[in-house]
Amino acid sequence: MTTNNEIALCIDQLVKYAEQNLALSTFDTNYVRNTLLDHFCITAPNTVELPETIEIQSIINTLIAYGMANGLAKSDDVILYETKIFGMVTPSPSVINNIFKTKAVTEGIECATDWYFELSKANNYVRMEDINKNIMWDHSGSKGNLVVTINLSKPEKDPAQIAAALKAKTGYPACMLCTTNVGFAGNAGHPARQTLRIIPTTINNEAWSIQYSPYQYYDKHLIALCDEHRPMKVNQDCMTRLIDFVDQFPHFFLGSNAALPIVGGSILTHDHYQGGGKGLPMFGACIKKTYKSPIKGTDISIVDWYNSVVRVTSKNKAKAIEAATYVLDKWAVYSDESVEILCATDAQHNAITPIARYENGVYIMDMILRNNRTDEAHPFGIYHPTEDLHNIKKEGIGIIEVMGTFILPGRLDKELNEIAHYIDGTNAFDYDTVANASHPLTNHKDMIKSIIEKVGTENTNEQAQSAIRDYINTTCEQILECTAVFKNTDTGRSAFDRFITEGLGCK
Image (cartoon, rainbow, N blue to C red; front, side, top):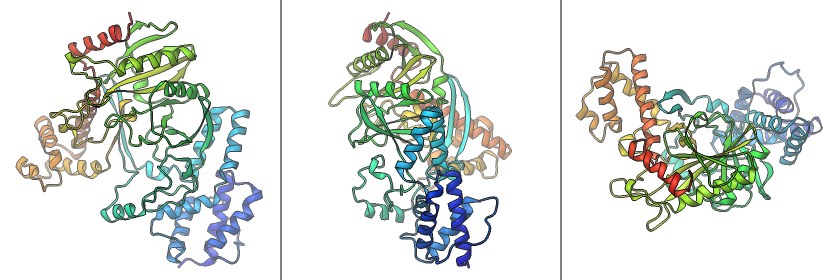
């Protein structure tokens, strides 16, 4: 049983950690220490010398266990309570913003954002302990490298948790991206945000803010969010904001999901963009062909990538915005029935996922062409992964995937290990048995059959795992190819060229 003295020691270590890693001022340490002592109902502070090494997660776990055992937590959700404790020792938003501004002026904007990233990890807003559980590997594909991730950092909720979440929904904050999330205590239906500190900025003369994504699907994954809760739109203002952002933060890229269902992001109700480090696979793709742009001072190219990417480049900021908007507007009304592209039927279908960068004095805007039309043969979307690929990825293919980084569901971790037992001969494979709807691997029946036909069943487990990864790698390439509105065939390439020359008027 943990004693009061042990909890007092943990509190002192937490305060010391906050001084060292969370920019907690020595002027505030007594205040924060007393706040923690009051919360944990400890009447006297620690009096023993602190150890040299502070194992912060162990300390936090001890405080959580004590608080829950003594009825100090309002729920049995460990993450909610952990966030509350870390929130007590994280300086206020104004303090964090002042430090950020000072660093930006004295050390440069990249140093400021690096400091902010380290802070976001240190107070567990970005939970690296969970993120590091993700399974990740690289694949050298036919059109460039891909990154494949099985996401284990965001555990699926059981039915009881889902029911509790529905009851807890209040409509406040309006969504996960609203600035009103800062300091929010959270509940079963909404994550706690006492550790969230957003950085205000101005983009195209509007109030926006930036924060790092708590899930970190790639290096320094950040979110730029409009301070006003309004729906997403991809228009000229969007192009201007993206270019303006990379002008201010040239070490980052910034892009927007398409603003339509199926081809868009999961939150279309709040205007926001995603950005971060420039290591995403698509950025390394070569140029297939460059055309003479009708917008003077700009180049328009086709990127040699799995899906359909038009690249706009210019050394002039205004021209880059003009050319990107031009491509956006032309694509919005472009149809080519010879390859079944219809810009609209009863609703708008053509959309663009734009991604901006600033490299060596050149503004780069990659415009990924999207279309969300469905038909009887493709109820999930004509340019959505076909149903034979849904066992690997059924969810929408948004901005992260189309740039070559795949976020696969966590369920695959267990399922792929079970599949390996068929490939290494541990379990005998019978197609009809696995095809039964009640079988836990029924969605993978054709995958298992295909792998066995290729490599047999006399494999080591390591060889089986390798064969499974090879299958997934090929599937990820096929998924990206599904999203291409112009297919990588003679017909598709001719149609793509026709859009550039006739639709855009390039030469």
